[in-house]
Image (tube, rainbow, N blue to C red; front, top):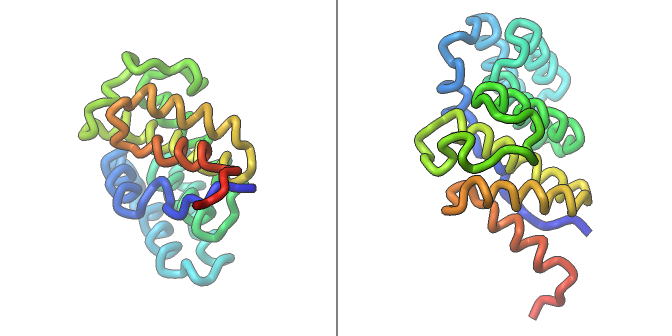
Length: 177
């Protein structure tokens, strides 16, 4: 049984803010145009995906492109592909923050995770939240639980919303009253 969590862990507004703030100035105009065209042709899967991949060729590893790919796959229900992009986002965020490449080894003292206005640590947290959520949706519940627990360890005030994921896991298998 998969958990029933409705919301995308990386909302459109958060994704746009993070993508723009993270190297937004260094995105080549051609890649930005492909991202724009992908959004306009979202309802035409092959065309939208082609634009996303063209943007990726022009700006490989750019946060805006990764977020565009993640959101496309997520909203199209292509969760395994979204998970692959979430993993790439975690790797990018870890590198940008100077963190361990394995999220399990990241400590709360490694970056200012508690300061929500710091965009780079927030990108790491949102990427890890997306990863946790997708693991849960793909019935990899223990991996999802570990990632959500790590989120709460890094963000004890829970600005990111890890407790929601952990609550869904704790309620699984219980009869609704």
